[in-house]
Amino acid sequence: MRNYKSDLEAQLKEIDELISKIDINATKQKDLSNCGIAISKSNGQDQYYWVDRLTGRRKYAKKSDKEKLKRIAQRDYEMLVKKKFVCIRDAISEFIKNYDIEEAEKVYLGIADARKKLVTPIIEPKAMSVGRWKSVVYEPMGFDEGIGGFYSNAGIRVRSKSELIIANMLEREGIPYRYEYPIVLKSVGTVRPDFTCLNVRTGQEFIWEHFGMMDNIAYANKNVSKINAYEHNGYYSGKNMIMTFETSQHAISSYKVKAMIEQYLV
Image (cartoon, rainbow, N blue to C red; front, side, top):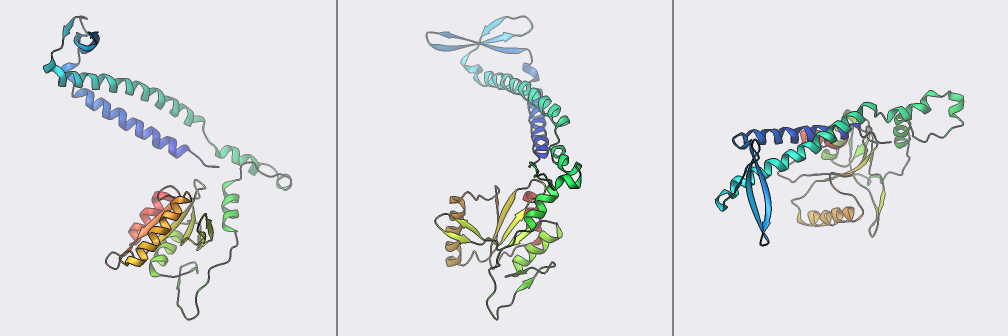
């Protein structure tokens, strides 16, 4: 089961950043700290008034005051948003204190081995689910006779130097992967993405396609159609698919590969 704690912590960070932004904006309006706005209707038209927050006195706002009115209205709106953000932040913070989905996974690990043989876990422990993912057996696509290959540090044969960079980096970072694992796309049939990878932390699966000759027009057109087919079947870059590209002038780098792994797979 996916652990959403890091997502919630990221949400907290985003909220704190927005609250800080609102506070900074508010300091820019210090000269108007005692000013408020009142609105009424007159002959179907909006009428704006300045309100002195200390005395409660109202004064008609002129058309020339429009920019100043906007500043005050924006400040008041942002203060309302801040109030809501503070409530949400406090609720998330309190929830995180008691949130640990892994405790539910540990229930299965805590029972006796003999009892485990009789039980099917509702929430599969991470080590078990990763092991099951790794144990899947499939028929490799194979290599034509006489065509050389490149072997990763773990002995996986791939078709290009660029794929070798990706394979070695995945292995170095401890990312489980399958090379050219077959999947079925509607209206297309069976395709074999270069890599199918597992994010061990979240349990999410990503396919990784590397497009290595994008300055070749025929190759590029063919693979744009392939990308469209992936999207038609629910695979989108950054969601459950990783894409890398290169041309004869711009080769893939290990830095780029590592950045992709850190973004999506760890």
